[in-house]
Length: 241
Ligand SMILES: NC(=O)c1ccc[n+]([C@@H]2O[C@H](COP(=O)([O-])OP(=O)(O)OC[C@H]3O[C@@H](n4cnc5c(N)ncnc54)[C@H](OP(=O)(O)O)[C@@H]3O)[C@@H](O)[C@H]2O)c1
Image 1: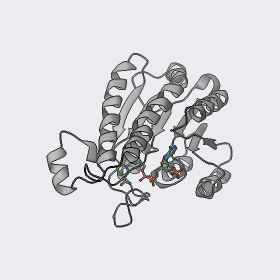
Image 2 (image 1 turned 135 degrees about the vertical axis):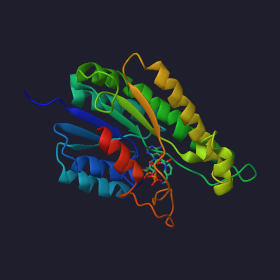
Image 3 (image 1 turned 180 degrees about the horizontal axis):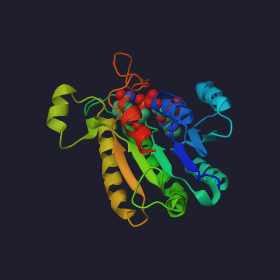
Image 4 (image 1 turned 120 degrees about the vertical axis):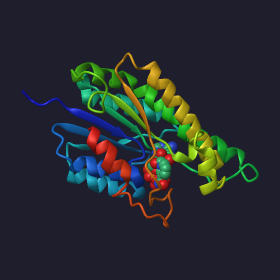
């Protein structure tokens, strides 16, 4: 009998951590998996690396258009993924797409605040909402007990900068910059904790991950952790899958 499929979806997969997660997951010997690598403009030059990677893994990486700020694009992507996974459903959704602005109370602009909140919280919530039916299918059809990323899970990529319990320590290390980003990720944290309770009975795991300070467009160039060595990659996702 063919081995059960493992279907994964990652948002913001055309660069940074998202692209590297797709690459490392595609190279892993997980039988029968499909990786839905989502980005807002698959035909744009900024998606070229992802398109090249997809060509190296035909039938494994599916590049899907998904702009987390555009509900119709989220709904269309969900329909498309649903039609490919069928009754196997979706096993892992990684909400990775995000944006950051570098502001504080005095420099913050209304539009930046709204865009950051819309992308990091509202968009992420709508993605989870639209893919829920397929996550439920994934949980049901997995035949696995307990909770895991092989069954059905939503991993929301957050940041230690949004930790309230560690705020005094973190703020002394990283002064208040990226305030809009921190506030939005704190919202994401609360959303995740609530969703973990809301979908417990469905057997869907909800988790938050801080990937470390990583050298990407967002993390900046003067950082020692590369995307390849990112602790998140090596110590969490790879082992739980
Ligand atoms: N790098 C770090 O040090 C660090 C630290 C803590 C947490 N994180 C978190 O890790 C995750 C990945 O960060 P990164 O460093 O890889 O960031 P990045 O290099 O800036 O990449 C961000 C990704 O999100 C996508 N994105 C932004 N807005 C989008 C939208 N509306 N719809 C769909 N995709 C959208 C971008 O696509 P486009 O190319 O289309 O813009 C890009 O693929 C984020 O959640 C971030 O908050 C990063």
